[in-house]
Image (cartoon, rainbow over all chains, first blue to last red; front, side, top):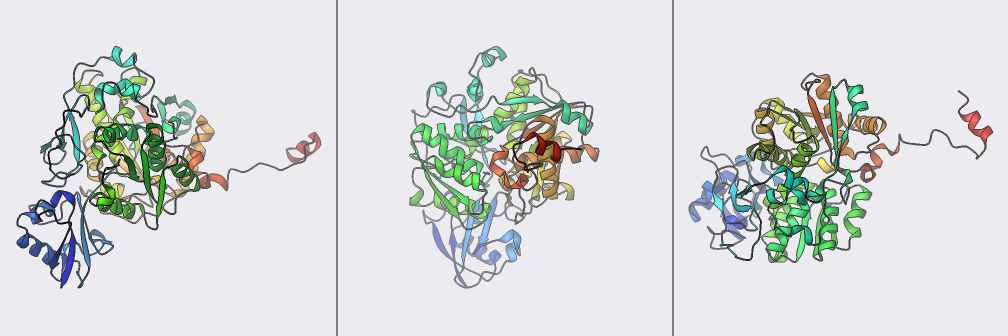
Length: 91
Length: 420
């Protein structure tokens, strides 16, 4: 499955400045593994030592915050956009 | 943004010395960044405080700038055009205390700020950061109050503004967000979706030179809430209250009130003593109180459904810290139904003559619930926050707050209507 991944500003040092990169995988977990293979080190910025999504990162598959669905096991259908976004303060 | 060096000798943040990650402690130069590049943790302002005395503060202006030596602002902040928020009333609420069975209760009434909510405090600090970084546009994602505060502050300071809100907000908040002349954009979605949109806008060239007060200026912005702690302590005669009840949306305000109290202790401005911090949420958006009650230290996001729209943040960024602070201080996080929110608005209005917005109804409702379920000590000195003005959320009580009678202008008609 080919997907696109939006990269937040603080992680663009890993992607050579690219705001969006292409990815592969049937689940979010697979997409992040492939992303880390393509851009070594980026995975550890998104996932903690236990392999869970860090508590101050929000990851969206399409419009959906993955914490509302299957987390890392969320399916990533062909062509979908994945966004990695730092949590922000309130309003 | 990113990690590019932001070192600039023209930056003037007063006593602020660096940004520091609240999670892992990594330090960064002061700049328009908000998340740690190592762990995504929120960045906080770190300080080198000089000497600060009670006398000096007391001699300062009747607004938050009396605490400028504790804030990331330049020494001449008072002389620059801004809304001069703060120094709102701390009301001794004896009637309400009597009704609830509390010995000593105060309401910190932040509806007295220039745009009628506590948001003027945080925006005033973010504005100074925006000026420091040379931004031309002030922006935010908002549940309503913040949008008005940003619009007004930008107008006063001569900056452009562009604010983003969910399209289903209360009419008064939409009007206030738009009247100051900046651009108001309503987004067809929840606050959390508006927030996500702003986070993406910030990495885009469309958002170049924009200061999003609660995103890329968040470390500075959030410090403004410390002034609530400073004022409460000073107004109590340089004493920290035993218990405080604070509304929780993103959790930033509660986190910074705790930081403010700890700074006052560290600087020797108040005596060190234990205090308990309680968080208040609406049941229809209670991810933090849900996590507290379940014993979790992470917050599962929710989709909000409550009349307390200013607290309707389903994915609260500082939620984990609220849990830490409530547990560390022996407080709690509790929630109330929309019905209880309305009752509490009326209770506060009837007993103390303070008309709170729905967020204030949430804190007073939770105060009542905590008293009833024994989590709050009725003998201890307690402060409850009202963070906004009831005129902004009239719909919450409009149906019940009606004339007792409609009569002709004659004594006979009055006598008939009120014969009993």
